[in-house]
Length: 143
Image (cartoon, rainbow, N blue to C red; front, side, top):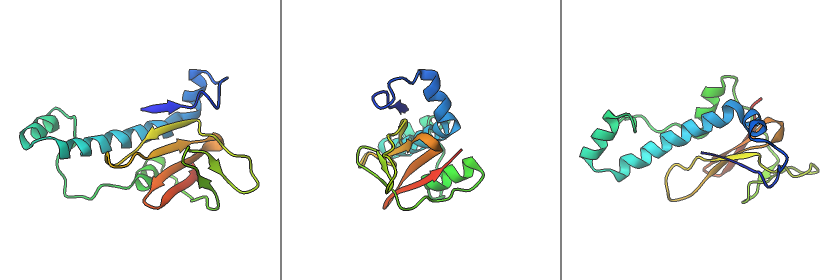
């Protein structure tokens, strides 16, 4: 589910948040649902898993390795993703780049792969998006 940063952007209306987030937010939610389905597979007994698959709550078993969030977003976006290097994302989600003002996230989505560690993807002004990776964040523009 998308969470909007009403504290940093108190004058934004719900419509403004939705317009800024656009398709990127929907794609992040889709990835999040897929990851949730993978967590359900682990938690459910075999019989329960078969019923959940039949009802469409989780994808059927596959031998394929789970696609990374960066690859998933690259495929959805269709234009390739260029990594913006030199900046960093703080624990609270603030994007910092030397000599630029800090950017507070407009929206965030829990894109954790499992329940062992919560990982958020962040959407910032100027179409900047931060996607969690094994070693930090992949930061790009998706406009």
